[in-house]
Image 1 (cartoon, rainbow, N blue to C red):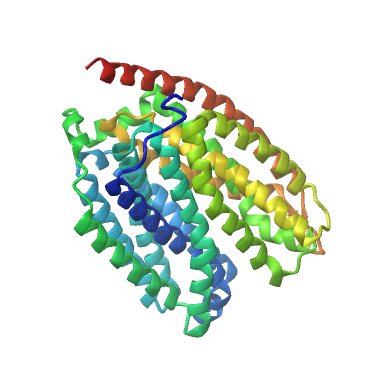
Image 2: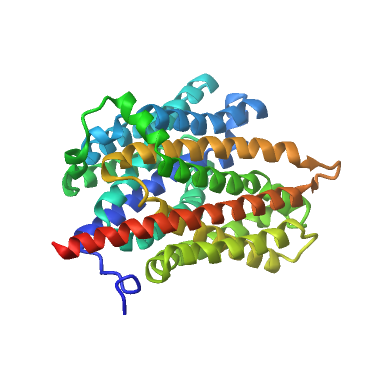
Amino acid sequence: MSSASNPPALSGYQRLIVAVIAFLQFTIILDFLVLSPLGAIIMPALKVLPSQFGVLVSAYAFSAGTAGLLAAGFTDRFDRKRLLLFFYGGFLVGTLLCAIADTYQFLLVARIVTGLFGGVIGSVIFAITADLFEYRLRGRVMGVVQGSFAASQVLGLPIGLYLANRWNWHAPFYLIVGTGVAVGILIMVFVRPIDAHLKAIPDKSPLHHFVHTISTPRYVQGFAATVLMATGGFMLLPFGSAFTVHNLGISIDRLPIIYMVSGVFAMITGPLIGRASDAFGKLNVFTLGCVATIIIVVIYTNLGVTPIQIVILVNVLMWIGVSSRMISSAALISAIPSPADRGSYMSVSSSLQQISGGIAAMVAGMIVKEAPSGAIEHFDTVGYVLVATTLLTLVMMVFISRRVETSAALAQAGSGST
């Protein structure tokens, strides 16, 4: 059996790093997601209009995207552990400001601060993953990271909403700060310096480093694939709940059941998908994920009134398809940048993902219409746009995979000869 189909086991220290990464992602994603369901409490409490609340939600994403671009030229010039602690500390300060905010303006500034720091953390995490885990192991690591997204939805959101209902809307942010401080201490005590990449950094200014990153042809190819992935994924998300309620006939009080079941399956299948991408090939898993996504999305966006059991099944299958694409593509794309450019590359990639996701949601809003009954019209059109972006991404990933596999084979041959 080849090494590609039988990747080595993780060491004890690597398992610790995976746990830290997953917990980091859990807190960051929970902070991003928790604001939306708190809208029903925050709007009357702060006398906020729906349009103003929409600004609150989007402020994080756009500030995160901006921060990633601004930090791209600097991220490869520091020990990644120190960089992570700096931005995670800023993120926790921003979240604490959210917890103590008592006016709309204060909360808006707090969300911008949180996004400025939180938007860089994701890119640092992916750079650390590429630094500490060889290519054959990255699928399973990305699978666990993706599972943390589901965990924040299944565990974090219900707990956060319970605390908000039990006390007030400030409580979930205090919860995030408390758990985040514990993670920060864990990083300071147990995570070793991550600075091997500093030996490979050429003598060039941050601006030169940034320009080099955004102009390198193979990097541009990876950026384009990331943009297409985010564009397709974020088009369905904003209108999924309205479509489920008004078009599929599911009562709003049963929505949590759908999300919880889908999240539980995502938590279970995420690590399995990651292991499969390492064992059977990242492009193979990505291709299967694309096929599954296309089939399920076309079915889902053309459904009428449907029993909840079928809706749950479709959502689970769609999530598995999307997760297969996300996990395998993240592992595949992580091999594109050289060690000296990983932080910069991941910063730009993360920023493009945030910005393109926001633009995709706006474009979807221009496509769909709301009927007098509340039904979402032209949702199938959004589905077909996602199908088109999925096919384009698949074509791009074929070329990216060929380049990555060739580079990996040359590197392995070189290490074997020494």
